[in-house]
Image (cartoon, rainbow, N blue to C red):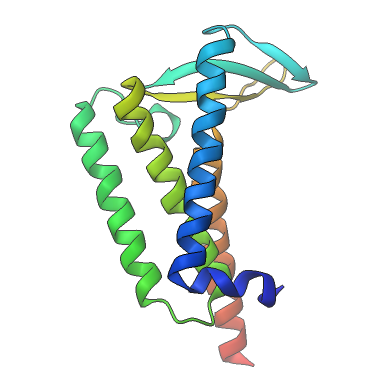
Length: 163
């Protein structure tokens, strides 16, 4: 596992991952904007549908009433902070470095949406007959999984320091 994750501790492989993730994210969002009807669920399987909506805020539509440039500035600050953390994190923290790259890719993907569409394109919906999760996109998934990976790395490092 470490051999697979080790490259993310170096700038070039991390940058390549970020660019590939961004291209995938933007290609999917373009297809969603072109072919998926707005606010109409397209079932994929039980409890999963494609549902195009436009998010004017950040995660789960928080700050939707905030000015668009404030949201962009906030995301740029987050990207800068995560890049700073990536640079300060030791090379042995391969899981965290992958997490940082995923967060950067996700945040940049949603920033690009703001410039291209004026909003973030969301399209994945998990639901039941009585409940539904917030609609999200691949970039949001990158951010969430990246954050989990950083936490996992911290837990593993803490356990290793106690052993």
